[in-house]
Image (cartoon, rainbow, N blue to C red; front, side, top):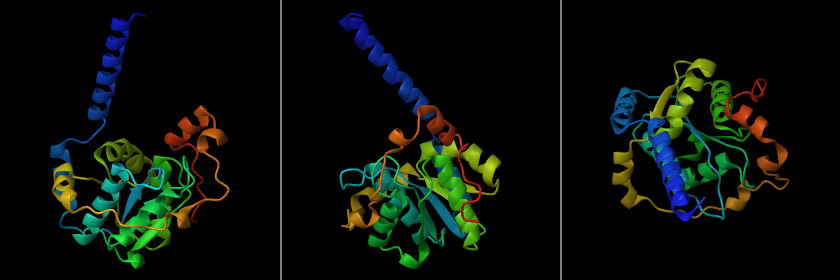
Length: 223
């Protein structure tokens, strides 16, 4: 393959990725519609899937998910927040890290819960839903970025509970909030897993793919 062919291949790959992301993400119009559908409701809890915490710094996607959860809490749409995620790719429990940031931003600790078994997005939904029911919560929502919420909608409604509300963050709203977003200090070592082994070393590609599809869930968890 010559240099020109290589450039075209890179262009086609980038175009395909952009198309894939846009086709698997909720549009701005749908974001507003789904938000409006819950704007006058009060959910007992929202589930916020985790994302890896690397190099002692939260990334923009984690920041967006935490701030969106806080926004829904501040608006009275969510009475409680369940942050979900084990130590999967880095030695920090994702759910615990996000919970620490939410509390540092002013969400009362009594209304923040963590789920630390999930290693895949589908497990974030399944395990957190089981935990929510164990805590006595009935009206449940999933709050995350537009891409993840759309990918999880089918699994959440068909495999867990069709009444689960999908609440992708509204990008226009987050854009308005961005100038006020801060980066509060947290003691992230409290979320460190001592015996950590990356999922890439513990599981082969096929098993991880099954996990992504919700095939590895432990149905006895949180019972």
